Amino acid sequence: MGLTLSRATRHDYLAIQTLLAELGYHPPADKLQQAIDEIGEDSDCLILVARLADKPVGVIMVYLAKSLVLGHVAVIGNLVVKQAHQGKGIGRQLVLASAAWAKEHGSPTLRVGSQIRRQQAHRFYQNLNFKHYKTQHWFEYEL
Image (cartoon, rainbow, N blue to C red; front, side, top):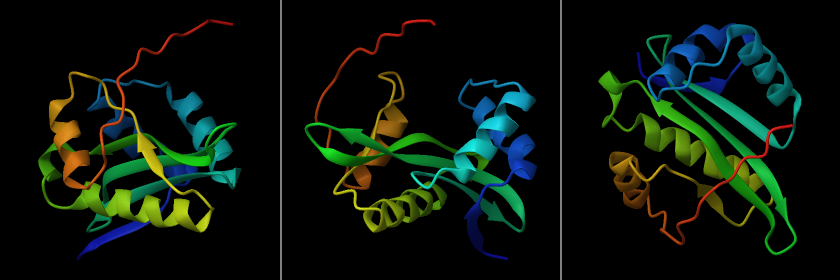
């Protein structure tokens, strides 16, 4: 059975939780289910799950951000493919599907941030013709 991509539902939360753990993220199950529900209802967001033989092997979340300078811009918030399935084109298919969605929603660009230490991810994006355009620091203010 080949690769399929479909919108995430709340029933995918365990698979998504497992995938996110591969990147070191450990959201509590209830918070993740809530996020999937909320994002699923937001027309400016998309979560796609990649499956091989009905088993989840990857996930991507993309959203439309608004900017005074750029107007709409699509941003990949999360992308992970199970390590055992990396290098097989799954991440590429998730990105291409997200890019098509972003274009349909009026975004002229698709952006992604990647931690400095994730050199393999940098090469992945560059191989997909993403251009490195700046390095910056992010700051967080707790509310």
